[in-house]
Length: 333
Image (cartoon, rainbow, N blue to C red; front, side, top):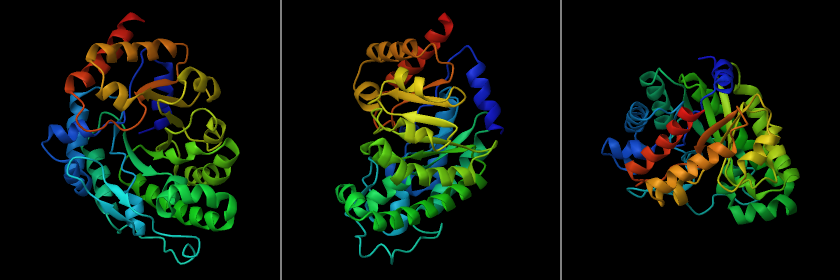
């Protein structure tokens, strides 16, 4: 697929489209548990496919699982039955970074995620499939400890630079392999960089992401840079990476960030997946989605999305309300 044409067609269209970061409802549709899906590439792909058939999303997305790469490096992971995996403790300190090995793509669950993307891209032929990967600063924070790395960035910048280099080299290898699966792009999730100032985000995140983008992004494969932690202070650093699309969380003003982002890039966000999609009534959800669409109506490069991954146990009628609001808005324009 030519992703440049896909992007330009979206921008040229009068109608709004949506790309929610959503897989969990598909897991529930096939009768699997979250634990099943994050450990089996086949079940993961089936969930993505079922969801793609049911809802008119402009692209399909894999689970935003920010433990896969950390597990490959050696982190211990807990696997609840019906919630996302989480990391148990940190892996390295400043003394052990030098000895940290960059893992192969056969480590941990990486092969299952590569399989999930390959199968999803083969099953879903009417829209692009976007893979997922963690960003280098977020991965480094998981290996080192988030509180610890925020201090070490200032006290031991050389050690953190080495850790970030190792993380980004692995992510680059992973994204290169994901590109071979037939996916049309990858959503690089870098939420931890939202804790940084613009200058620090440039130094500890964006320069590494730009290197990855320069290696893998072309007219057949795009990078969507996701940072749900950004409240507006590091948007310029995100834009400096040269991604073809930017994805924002519910902590930011979409009209304001749309003014900052290049008009030829897609800007996605930012319905709260928990506070709105899971917790509100269908009527309230329709109002929230409609309000966001009206706020962003003057920006043709806006793509409706959730601010982050849709959690498990969102009522089906709530998801339908999200899509109903979009359809109603498009009928009015």
